[in-house]
Length: 454
Image (cartoon, rainbow, N blue to C red; front, side, top):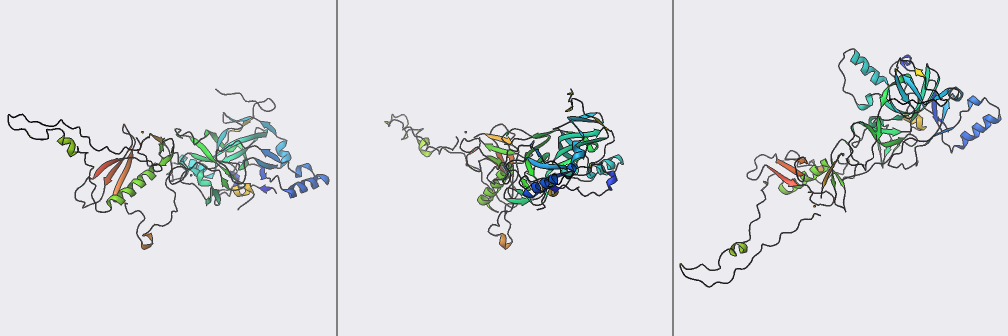
């Protein structure tokens, strides 16, 4: 059964929108009723324009993660009105305000928020705090068609800002809405949410790359995507889970990697610090001072072995046994181990669109598009998210006690800038503690294999 993609509601009058007479209907290829109705129309000799052709869009996105319901993001769809769409000429590119845009390229598309922000800037009004989703929308061009230079349209797939993920989105085993802790500031979510827009809504080209999580050293400074959203099932593709807390990595935050062959796990910086705070509180509590580790002293027997066993009388020879080599007890060993000419399908360059840009007539709702409403050892740096929330209450919380009693008592920072192995730098914030050290350092240990990181 086909489902119509409705316009997103607008605050402003529609005369401020870029006109687009086309809409997309997502089709279930297994829907027998749809096939039966289509066959009946043809049998009765109904106008061919009344029955849109079912097309298959192979997805340009191949996320590393998996979906539970659908193996791919390939989409069956119809364009309405079909004849008006197919009668237009298909192009590989179009030119807008002197800039050439290509099929398969990424673009920024104007919306109400970005238009209002531009107006405020032109009027020198103070800027409001905004989210990434207040920026221009981002889309990938799938197809370009035009009847003349004044009527140029692009069929696109929308890229979602994480803030735009709708309520009821399935992320692993839980339902979420909006941005999640593991989403980076410049992260987008690819989708098979299809639309047709008037290209006068396009504001500029966009550069978007896919981030492969196994590339541990890659830092994302531009727009990127690693996860995809299937509008048919409201499902996000899976992402790699890291650390003891078993949550995804946020590329904007540090991860420390254990390279012990049997481990090779990434750890969140905040998880390492949290573990250090918890261990320190368990050892010192609220009133015990931190005593510095005493240097290892020589064994008494070793000191004895450095002098004769019996004192000598003045001026007298003394018979004595040969010296005995005495060794200290063995210390336990630590575990370690130019522009390109693009031609039209008919061997022409694309038409030049008019220079007057206008905001898009609107991104259609995901629910309508889908037809449903309904995360020695060497340390390596990466970027990562925080601990998983929603943990069960610990003992004492029921009585009003905090689950993190060390808060405000100690401070820990992870220093990876110094030469040599990384260290945890502690600071005692407690008052009235007599004796002991107020600052000290400790080595970092892997949260999973407990090996000291060197």
